Amino acid sequence: MFTKVLLVTLISTVAFAYGGDVFSGYKVYRMTPENEAQVQVLRALEELGGVSFWTGPNPPHRSSDVMIPPHLQGDIIEGIKKHGIAVNEYISNVQTLIDNEGPLDTKIVKGTRYDFQSYLDVDEVYAWLDEQAALHPDIATVVSIGKSFEGRDLKVLKISKSGETKPAIWLDANIHAREWITGAVSLYVIDQLLNSDNAEIKSWTDDYDWYVLPVHNPDGLAYSKLAGNRMWRKTRSDTDSILNCKGADANRNWGFEWFTGGSSSNPCSDTYAGPSAFSEPEAKLTSEFLESISDRLAFFLSLHSYSQLILIPYGVDIEFPQHEVYMDIGLDTKDAIAQKYRTEFTPGNIVDLLYVASGGSMDWAKGVLNVPLTFTFELRDTGAYGFILPPSLIIPSSEEFMDGLAVMINALRAGIPESDAARKQTKPAIIKPQILHKNKPTVDFRGKFFSKH
Image (cartoon, rainbow, N blue to C red; front, side, top):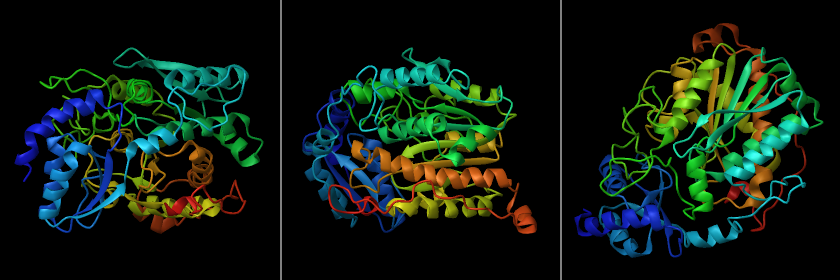
């Protein structure tokens, strides 16, 4: 199908990967296949490169969002339509959304408190973590768990009132560089854990030790934030690509069911799994740290964007014996999230809601460490902004996430049945906590509820 544009697509791949600091004229199209043959067309398009799948390629009847540069739009859209795939233009100019995020080099004025109205770069995040640890030296410590490919620290903030003897909760963000909202939400969680007067939130640090990694992929975030390629996803490691393509998908690089589906062997692909499991230091070092606290690790939680999903294991087609247990928690979490802004999240299995995606961190945490509770969130939105969520939505996104997190922590306290069969025997009640934020739904600058983009 795409032989007509193959050569120009391959050439554009290099330009996209290394010269993509301006996205003027880039559009995002929503494509919806109706059968498996059409899905294969989208997969072929992904493998060719030169385009960026923001979501998908998804199974039949589920849409995929695809960013296409101006010089390829005509040929690709014509080819897609010839195969009968429904196509709708969803974002008319990606650069406009980037411009509306504000300047990439926004800085925090020294001595002022971060107001969660902008996205921070790696150095700013690390400075803020150090500041919070200095303000709370009795319970907070910043540790480096190792260095990224380019030599940046992987900084974890520990919060412990127990001398690291309590059950542990892990939270990470920004394993994919372009998902800026995830890091901002993780910082909001830290801010609340250390500074909130809310009795419910205070109890979370009484009962649990917390470990938060706000920037799982610091090289990628630095490239996305400061080098001008806002849409960069992967790490920045060297590859054997003849096109000099960089990096691997750090969330396809973990050593559980690695490279068994939903990832690529093409170093130029956004879902390149790497040459081997844990080839990326960002994944390997994080796994080693998690193993070091595995005897206490009660809850593993990873933040991604976008799509408004509450994902449960696994990303491959294997049986998950706690499916109903997790779905109960997910449904209660969904209800809590919707209370303030009416934002609708959907809980479910990765394969059922998205696609096969092997080698993910959550699957490793469950499949290897058998952490009692393991979830992944896909935060806002559902595609109107995609990865380029305006900074004005950081606080609303964070507040509703905290409401959902309260449900999950309450479920953890009640005890997590080891199987669906055990759940049916015991049927433990999940007591829903008081919603942390109770004001009426807020309307955004478009005059629509945030959840209705």
